[in-house]
Length: 164
Image (cartoon, rainbow, N blue to C red; front, side):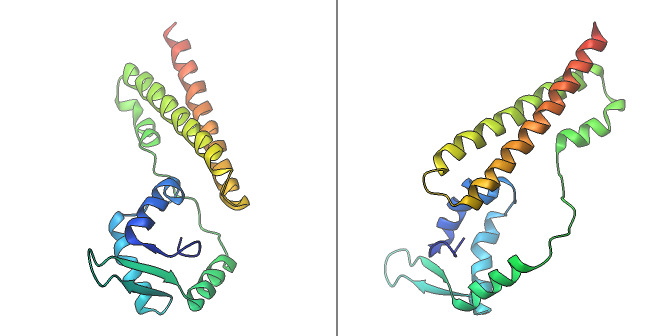
């Protein structure tokens, strides 16, 4: 995030929550702790206000940009980790009641539809200033959420057909 602009940890928290935080979970503490490590590693610099709240502003250094380029150039073969409480409940659904399963399908369908709608609205806001790759990222988010939304819609229809 510092590649775009110098920032405080609070700024980073705000930026992350509306961008990469949509698909990569960060502990808020990490956004406050990690800059100190990057300063110690010589990848970013730190400027502390001399008065007031003594906020720390971080800025990427040439060594940090090089580390970012190296990271981007590296292979990305890791499997995607999905942590979806809905899928976990579905896996164990044979131990529950049919009505609970219907409610799960309705809730997950609505949740994924809402998230896709939110991403779509966010994309419309971003199109004015985001770069091509940020827009592609949110496009994938929209597609993912619509796909999962459709799964739950189809599953819900199956469950409702069984009740008829």
